[in-house]
Length: 135
Image (cartoon, rainbow, N blue to C red; front, side, top):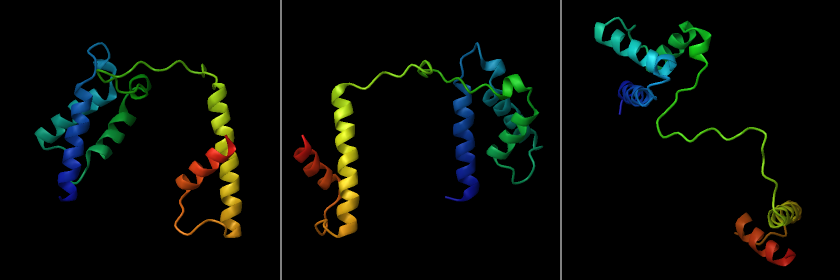
């Protein structure tokens, strides 16, 4: 595919994603606003020659008021944002696994530097054997 065709396909995909915005936020959605402006300029033939969708989008977002330009595109079906700062503590098993993996990683590095790793042995194979040994 030529670069122009790939760019056009990306532009269509991106513009299509912008169309999935929820109606309540569509007026403030920069993808929706810039997508409409891009289609208008393309139809009217006023789009500068060789300008890609990404270039147009960057210029369009820069010209939008800060409140609209900073809002992310809301897409139907998006999961609500996870609460910030509320991290679930690790279980005892997760802590033990992380500790063994860290220890095995240190052993892997030491054995590799000393040339003790069997020819063809990969980290997953080493980790499996080391994990069994340390359990």
